[in-house]
Length: 255
Image 1 (cartoon, one colour):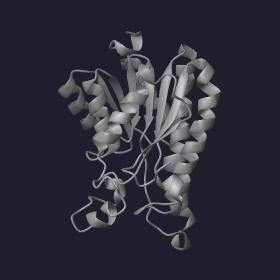
Image 2 (cartoon, helix red, strand yellow; image 1 turned 135 degrees about the vertical axis):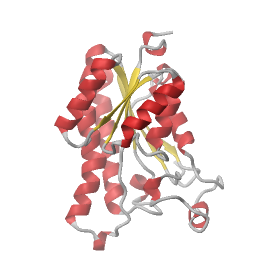
Image 3 (tube, rainbow, N blue to C red; image 1 turned 45 degrees about the vertical axis):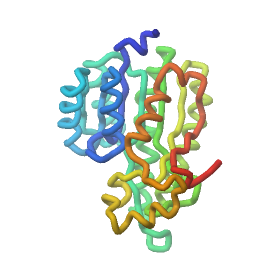
Image 4 (tube, rainbow, N blue to C red; image 1 turned 45 degrees about the horizontal axis):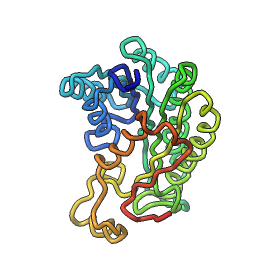
């Protein structure tokens, strides 16, 4: 076993406040596997979530309120993590916002908000954390993309969201090449039709048929499905995987 699998590993997860979100599910899964965690979110609920997850799993979990697209805010939060936790070996860029506004109805403010959170936020947090990983010679970065970036939009989200997630994928591939010699891997997980609030609220019984009709597997995806894949990509066994995009979409997109 390596040092990274013996209790001296820390992951930073963004977007971990929402009770029904991928970030929150992933945080609980990682804590259960012995990871220490730094949780970032603009929602103050992240501090309560961190306390609950840490108490439930017996690991050190620190929550910090931060705007992920603001370098000063991110720096303060990550500095607090570094003061209390082992060195960061994993980063999951999970925070994101969606937009159902069609292109012809969209204004610049909507476009810039979606791009700022999804694309700029991924850059800012990665810029603060990845250099330390590279300096230490080990790191795993996983960013949450979307099938929308491949299909040109989704059942709910439209062009701004697709463009922002496309930027995340392109950035991740470029970053993967730059930091691979330093022992850092960078990958993207691209979900589709996961029952979270980013789908415009709960996928209720009246909304469900429209989503299920597109899914060959015949069911909606869960945050647990996504968390399991991300956990693998953060682990030692994924060290030969970088610059990849993993589709987890129930067959919505093949290939």
